[in-house]
Length: 177
Image (cartoon, rainbow, N blue to C red; front, side):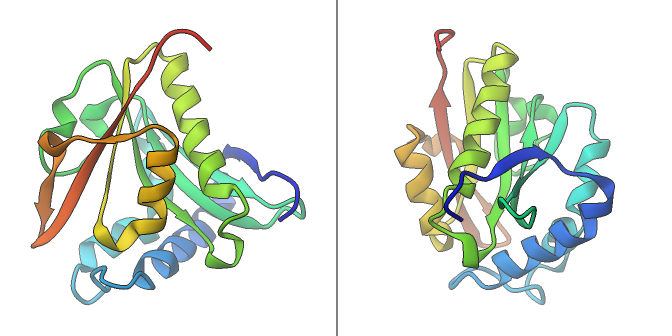
């Protein structure tokens, strides 16, 4: 993908394809639970389009120059809808990012970065002071991306999901830019 990906809201006709992509991405991660280990989590991934039913959530997709779906993410403008373990859902003046996934064939082409930046811009547009997200050891590629974007570890946001350590990150926002 030599041109930057196009980022936009998912369309209902893309819900199933995005769900399949998310299941494929997450189930292929070394060290991440497989569908048989956490079936409800994978049901959520497959049904990622349902997040559009939440009033403050948006599902964004990345498209190649040819219009191919290459990735997606869920943005939460209200942390009460975020739906993770730990204390993140009680955060105020914050937006959240969950379920960032990019087709492995398009990694290192800017789709993940563009999706994360789009969420950061949405948070700034809401006037929020921070963006919160979670990741795991198995998601080292995403972990590095988040750190390059300025996110820092926030141990107070950590929790365990069925024995899997989940690590919290925060990005402080300013009103300039």
